Image (cartoon, rainbow, N blue to C red; front, top):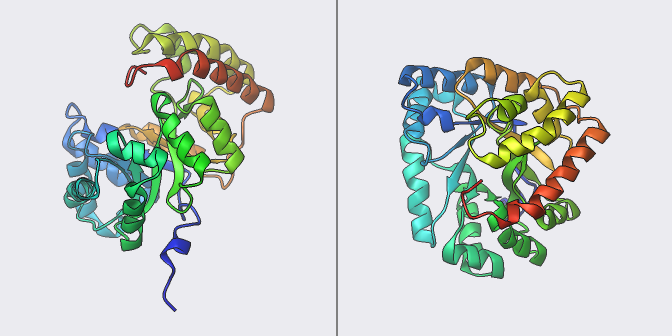
Length: 311
């Protein structure tokens, strides 16, 4: 009996690792290319999934070099994809697969704007296009990228029920200082039992650095938030900021994985160690509640009013 493609893709993202290696730093030309290939190989050997994009400099070319060293260890990957029609989307997919020498995307991270975003929100051809790519096996799963200034689009789509069988999870920044889904979208995802991929695990730097070190907080709001979060972190009794952040993400049952980028072996080792247990221990309830209260206020006061790419 032939397999039903819709049934195959209705169960979420099978086999997903709790930690997903973010490849942003692999595109940093200030780091020697051989060192970037080496850290990619270390992540490959761990068996975790990867998150990649053509936007990350020459990261795809670095990954291609790493993959060529051992094709049996090529990881399953997320890719950022976008554009406004099926032909453009196929071209975007092809230009990212080619440097890696692979023939499909395990997960396409839909970064939609313009006509495609409006079709996604209201209903339109984009849904047939996404289903076609799934049925062909070119893109095995889709996640939808969310920012505070785009939250209305996935909110309307999820509320309408159109995302079922198409969108396997929503992906956005989720760490103690950032929750880049609006309050009403966050609440709806919880109500609908939707899955979340948390990005930017540690918010780029430890909370005390963001609060106290000049330049560590590259935008002012992070410094302000760090001042509010630091006492909660200290009260938790957890010494390591990375542990605090990983446990925060997995304090929410709908979070399936966290994406953290690094070029440092010690940081990669930390991420792998913290996500190795079958179940990551959530933070104490009072600590989670304190952070959730802050995030709900930040979302209403700041996030949903922010201009695109200012956060």
